Length: 157
Image (cartoon, rainbow, N blue to C red; front, top):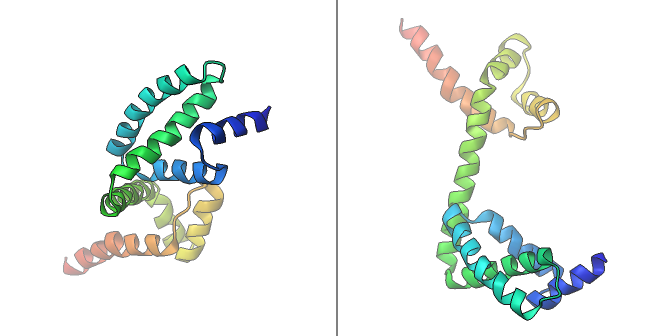
């Protein structure tokens, strides 16, 4: 059953499973506007595939049409546009990570000042207790940015 669906996806997309997965990873990396363009294209492709393959499972047709839409949409982009889109996506991830770390900043202060933990151990603590992967250098840089200013203000007063 699984191999039938796999074979159907390969037949419809004319791509191996590895190539299909690569297209889906690209879809995950692009910005939201590009994703919306891909999904608009996917809808029309789905109905075309449905007309040609009436007996095929709708889930297989949806996945196949998404993969084909990713390929067709990204063919229109040049390398620069694609890299810009990936860059914006990475920046968004950094912003989300920063906001999440700020939400836990009281914990960082407690671990650093009262528990005397190193930034590396604080990073490990977040990974184990919160399932939140953040590098020690990110925590350190935010510490300098946030706590360094407080020390300067106290010394000025």
